[in-house]
Image 1: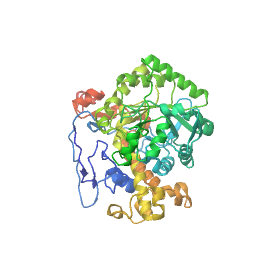
Image 2: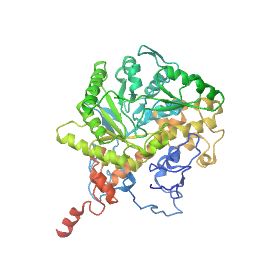
Image 3: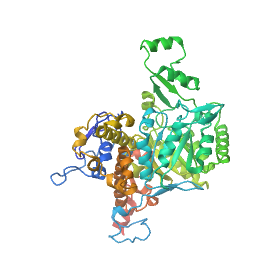
Image 4: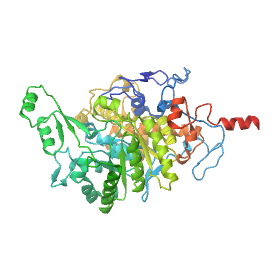
Length: 546
């Protein structure tokens, strides 16, 4: 297994736990006091693009060892001439070809185009309690940045206040809260996406949402995710709630209605229960049967009024990937999110997360290959989003280039949740009367924050940018977690602009696989991206021999 460094002296970052390829700790705690790169970037923003202590230090690359097939073993090309994709009104003069002029706006969809200001979207934030606790920060932040946010599976099913009778939702307060929070600051960029699994389909989520919100919401069908190959889980520490979920039809382990289990819980032999979702397509025996069922479901969703439909699939094998891509293309879906192993936000079984499924770079490479096959056969290939352990601007560039020209968005789960935790903790420490509502963990600001500042205008580099957008009056009601998400997104956006400018690509549509090379033979074999010294080698020899 590749081991990643816990600290980066040039940036002044440290991981509390064992870091993954994304740079995030494998176990990211909402109470963390820092200082990973994403955590710091949520406060000081684009300053994190550069080494610390400028003016009294010099710095050099720390790790030029490229092992195995992973995103770290892809490197980004730079070019010394030309400029492609300049926004309208700009020329190819040196005055115009500067990185702030790189356009990051993107869109996805078939009949209806959905715009995003930068090529990011959140992962699915569903029935995990951490999603509910910090939803205001996540949703307001995503709306202000102008990116799609996904309400994950089971939100209605686990809501004690939701009323479901005979497969029809009569009341869904938690789902409505989540949608309304995003729409309050939605300005035409981004989208609110509601995801459905087997339970949600059974409960009539799609019918309820279209009746209440119409085409303001995108509906998403879910096949799986990159963390596990069974349905979603949450952990419950309340016996009555466990029985409630059991009676609502969920699999709850151990069974809370068994007298022996109740007795064990009473005496603390059992301290929690795991709630599981059902598996989909269990009555299907072939890809053809799945296709028919899938197409019937899409037809039903269009019939009841949905103009935009997406699909999320996980890190299953090549057969399932081909099915997802072909069926989504044939059904003219608006987006297919492909989540490789290495991703995950919730309570996945740990060894399942560690050992099942196809790692992101393998899955994404095959997705690009299969998209090319569909394209050659005349299919209008579905727009793609790549997910699975991606967190930084270099990840965004590499994933967009690896899947070019079919990738439109990069889906980030945990990375875009960190600013919500951090901002809530800062706000709760500054305003103790808000601590409970915000689910904040700190009683006072830790030294890692105080080194940056003492008040929000000083702590968050993006504070006045948000104030400029919402106004001096409204800024007082914007959660600090949303300001932190803006600040992190600004850092990622600026870093992506710099990488694109170095590749002489001034719009996302110009990014191509030629903007990458492979740092070892293994990643070359997996991705089809040429090896470092072989990329553009024929061009070089033509110059020498010309």
